[in-house]
Image (cartoon, rainbow, N blue to C red; front, top):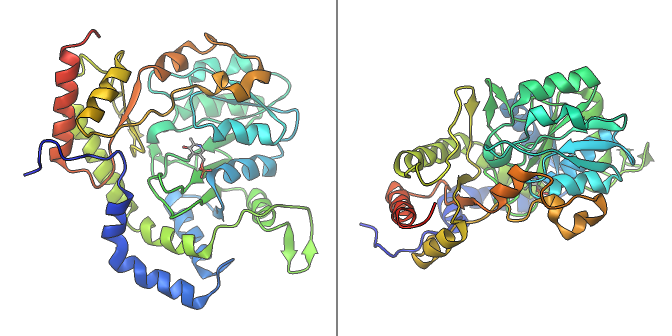
Length: 374
Ligand SMILES: *Cc1c(COP(=O)(O)O)cnc(C)c1O
């Protein structure tokens, strides 16, 4: 029996290490013994396995999800002065990647499910628009059919920010295989996680793949020939070995997260909170499990007092960040994203969470909300 006041952390990376240790230690030892730290066989193996998993021709291992976005856009020809349409309620990296190129982020509001509203995209297209960057937030894929139709009508590139959605599906199609490039993060807090920074890019386009491969390694076509100047964004061989090992467990991880989500959905009183349902054509992987309620701050405090961790992804929409001042947006520009920023709360959903804990959290939430103004 679990004690009533046992602490339930929002994430539990130590539990992951405890589970992986026995199998992972010999792998780490082998990589260290081989002493081939940059480049190396694990990277190619990991790339092949990811390409299979995402149902794409190429996967390219990189140093971060942010670099996947930047290099993906460079390879697609997006450059200074171009405009890229994207939602304002993402992790800051999606917008920062656009800004890093000297391109301009053009924000579009989101739907109640937190993903970009396709109906608002077309009116924002100008002569400078080169791409749409949907963010598959929470592990749910954005409504891609209308977005793909708009992209095709205006000849725009689709850059999927798939950082939170490895293994997610939309009408049976895998995240990262729907656009021109899929950009994934393997940050320690993502569903498929390294022990440090890591990311990767997926594409079916041979030229884009070749270009990203070159760029990640100084633009070196061979040891001594630089065909175009690049940068350094290689994945460590060690991280690739860890990721390749964890990739084999991804299916289990996703199943457990989906089960956890189902238990929450069954138990949390939906009169008090908004819990977005999974539509029939969706397969969500629940990077986060987000509820929305008017007394979010009080609820978070209450959960804290009962040793239950939670998080807010993200409390300040990007257009209202100090860094966005020069973009000229103001409060009220994206009412749905702004409304959600005050209401969203991510509950623990990780694969080491047991049903008893979810029952306890759900009970606490129902108890709290039944006595509060909603
Ligand atoms: C994590 C994340 C990123 C950035 O990934 P890094 O590997 O940390 O660079 C980009 N977009 C979204 C939506 C993310 O969640």
